[in-house]
Length: 101
Image 1 (cartoon, one colour):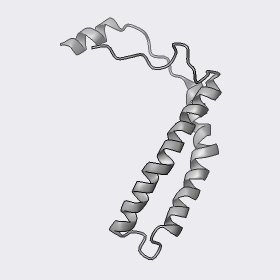
Image 2: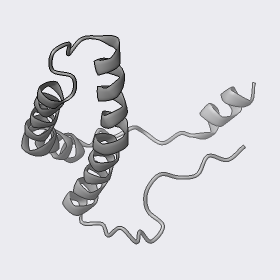
Image 3: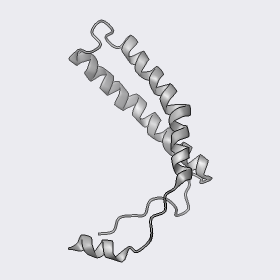
Image 4: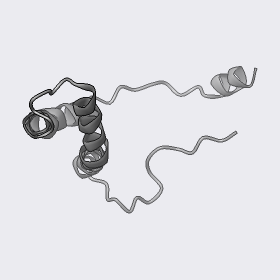
């Protein structure tokens, strides 16, 4: 029932953000696609290349991906979004609102 109360209280109309869609698309084309392709090709070439689909290779690639590539990717995505939207990393109250119980 608390979900109904929260939903009923929010009467704002949803407005689609086309500029954000364009920013995220450009990020994928300019950064994520080319760099990820090179990253995964390098993993295939250097991490157990004799058996690239074996359990050890998959575990090693997943570990390297999560420890090295994921932090860089997420940081880059947020930096790109902030830069393209004209915001600074220091914020100033913008961004995602806190969820209140």
